Image (cartoon, rainbow, N blue to C red; front, side):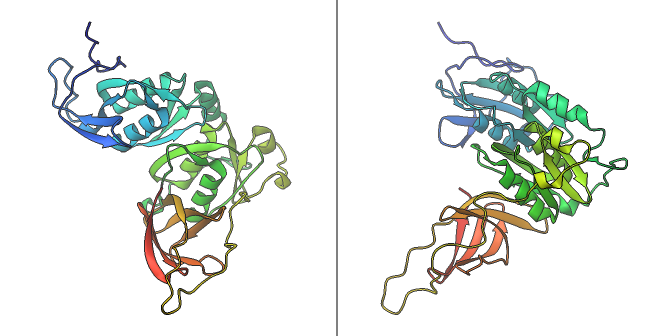
Length: 335
């Protein structure tokens, strides 16, 4: 007996067959398909861009749900934040599904829901997200005053994309704050990983929604952004409970700097630097890099404290550095 075909508007079992042109992501087991229209399916709404409709098929063994959600977001050009509880493999197949419905249907497979806040889609526990969204009457609640926030200039909008496996939420928040020139502190309840795919989002919206999707609260007090548990942000706030420190973040490498090899000697190997992710806006981008078990948050023109390396340029794809070990410039792609 043949398997049913994927149906627009709902998930369907995996079916055999092929269609049109496919763009492959993270190897052959996952693809977003740009298929020729099949008359068996309802026509797309007139005026909607083609990229807002998603066709997707995984292998029968399934694919990491975070990869699936990230691929949908990338194809549709939308912003997503994924809670750490949304994890595991799922098999899926659907055709010409509007991106927002696609996100919701995929999330349902792990008993998660999607809450939309402006141009950001938060994916996690429905009850937790709804509670956090309803807690404050303003985007960032103030300890005093109305809490109204002025809309920022478009040039200050931030973008960030982490790996599907996620990054330390403290590192994500700290990087956004450094890039935006803001002071942000968090309490001990801020921990774990979050998967982020944001483009052209203002700082306060990004921090607020990253906090909410993790069940955390946020306040702005005396110009400082505080993220943490609700009980630490109620009444008289004790600033001793908050810090900006992230374990492992450093400005110094514990290896001796070398200006390069002497004449006739073989060149030393390049520094084993890894670029985790890049965050930034039109005027400034910041890279999160790791070396020798330490993490560095650096912008273009900034050198590591002992000058073992210097960041020359940061873009959406990676970082160009000067490596003092080899005495040469090189480009490191996001890994």
